[in-house]
Amino acid sequence: MTLKAPFGKQLKWIISDAKIPFSFPCAGLGRCGKCRVRFIKGVPGANNLDRTFLTETEIQAGVRLLCRCVLTDDAVIDLEYDKGPDGYNNIEETIAAETMDVYTGEAVYEEGKKAVSKWGLAVDIGTTTIAVSLVGLAEKDAAKLGTEAATRDPIVIDTISGINHQRQFGADVISRIQAASEKEGAKFLKRIIQEDIAALCGEILGENHVKKAEAVVVTGNTTMLHLLRGVDVTGLGQYPYITGNLSLEKISGNDLFDSLETSRVHKGLLEAEVMVMPGISAFVGADIVAGIYELGMLRRDSNTLLLDLGTNGEMAFWNGKRLSVTSTAAGPVFEGCGISCGIPSVKGAISHVTIEGISTENALQDEESRRSWEIEYETIGDEKPVGLCGTGVMETVSELVRNKIVDETGLLTEDYFEEGFVIAGDDKKIVITQGDIRNVQLAKAAIFVGQQELIKDEAVKEIIISGGFGSHIDPEKIKRLRLFCNEEASVIAAGNTALKGCVRFLSKVMEGGIELQKAITELVEICDTAEVVSLAGSNDFGENYVAGMNF
Image (cartoon, rainbow, N blue to C red):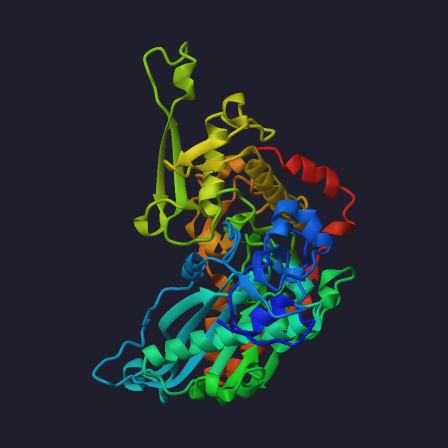
């Protein structure tokens, strides 16, 4: 492939403009040294960051860090050089967001009497993935219902998901914020998320032979929605975490895709009525608001805790009178990132693990028998294991604690301390290392102390876990992690509550009238009454965090 570029332009923006996929784990700031390419011709001089991360032999061979490299001459470049597990890999195209079941509810098609009268799309923008549901609004049979006029019932016709290609600029929102601090970075991140949404929406409309979507509702965390709308995110990356618009926003399809040529957007999207759901704060976004709305938390009479176990660790607590919210930097461990053999939820990812000791008659005396383990695991798609996704990581560590292979402080036994505990694999072994366990401890301690600060001394009757991790984890299998603040509470996996809440609100948007006004009032009430709890302001945070690391 031959590309043209002006003198002095950074290589990362040249390949980004050309839509060549590449991963920048540290958001292209030159802090990790992982985005290496090799110049075959036109090698630029090595800068300080090249000399920090590369050996002299590599520098002499023409290896440079792509993210900080500036072209000064015609060049021939090998972009495939030294791509390790953190580099861009097509396997990530198979990452699936947690979507929702396709259903017909009461509005089944019966002899053509209940044809869909309106179509809409619900879009949930996650940091890693994007999920889209196609919703139809159908007329119910008024005669059967005994009403004077027909009422409407939403039908989820189809649901799909795809990768958020902003991921190439880092797995977490902080990396995206840093990447957007450069003018070209902000423009690129806006364009790429709009392209992703346009592609998914166009695909789901086309596959279902729908010509036009009357309405689109979008939810996501605050950073994702700011990047989508081109709102400056630099204030989100530093205290006091200043946000742009958090209110419910009504725009058009043209506005939603304003950085794209209209020819690249499905015609049935351009005139759609678009609603961007409201958020609460910099790190408690519209996705949590959608979850609270879907669960009807403000109408519950028992203490309920909602946890979104993702990078931000957003959570909400309702005690029957007051709604408190917070977020904590759990990191990407719950998505399999930051783990030596961790991968996203792709085919072949180990998702469930059971470890049992091989018993013998003299097991109590035979030291070797206590070092023999039978390991059972499940992989996504029943494929050959290629790594551990978030649930696999958590279940593995919990099982290691249960079998006393890891002690309460997180220390692996001497047998496995140096090389880690092998879960699977022959030539390329899939292991959990001491460093991996420490990363799990850091993440789970952040979630644990966040819960403590949120609920204080109040009891919790129900803990609801949302998102992909919460949908597939077995609460019983991870109880030894000491992840939840109240072990007596019922733990319920609720799936993608953000997408479900988005679908619910979408149905009200399509219905219009008093039902829409009631829905808007409920969303505004959630945002206006939520009390944001600042973890940084807690005197006990540090002490509780350290205590929360123990198993």
